[in-house]
Image 1: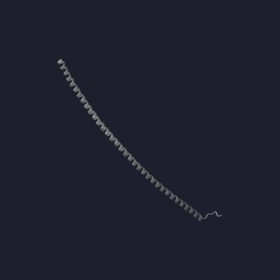
Image 2: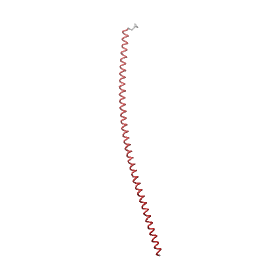
Image 3: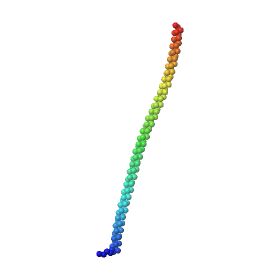
Image 4: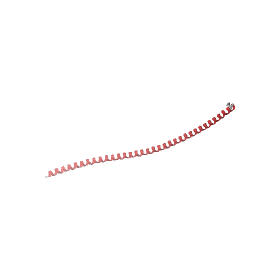
Amino acid sequence: MNSKVEPREAYNKIRENMLELEIERDEQQKALELLKEVRDQERKELTRAVQEARAEGGEYAEQIRNEMAARIEKQVQMIEALLEDKRELQESVEGMQIKMKESASQQDRQCKVLEDKLQVELKRNRDAW
């Protein structure tokens, strides 16, 4: 057996190995590019999904904000109406108090007049006896 390798054979083997390595490197490069494309696609889809979720969340938040504003406005209107009712009732009570005081003072005056008339009548009756 000839243990000596011919330079041409060695060259051909090395060239063959280099071609196989180049092919393998090209395949790995293609796989890497494909992986990058898939990762970029996933990133785009994820970004789009996040943006959609934010938009939906923003719309939902806006809807809740509008509902709360409407509720608050309704409550403010109710409070204003209650305050107006209270003011009217207070004015009514104050008016009644004034009328009651006037009525009491008028009754006191009438009572005084009647007492004076009674005293005069009693004195006249005494004098007549």
